[in-house]
Length: 105
Image (cartoon, rainbow, N blue to C red; front, side, top):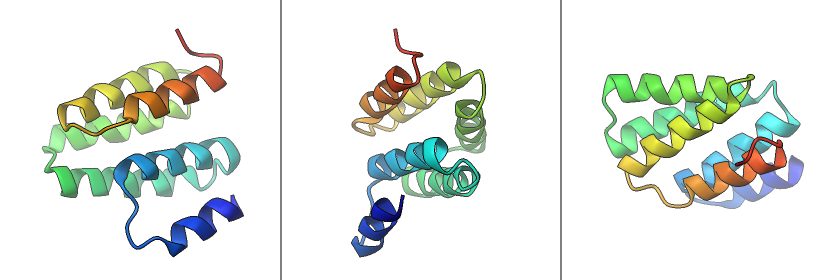
């Protein structure tokens, strides 16, 4: 995780897609750090893409599901939501993460 933190600190701006990849790394390697990272990512998504309140709540709930037995449902909800806002690679990132977890198709 130190490598990820160092690389992120050197960047002026982290794209939302890359931020999601960092959140997933935290979930896998530093689960105690994941909630803060997830909250920050959803806040950025909300502000940068103009999400409505219900959409922000959905994103938060989906992140919560990623850390539970409902991980697949959480990933699918995030993929659908991010597709509406034309975020690239979210489906690929979450699909690969689900595969690593043994939850892929």
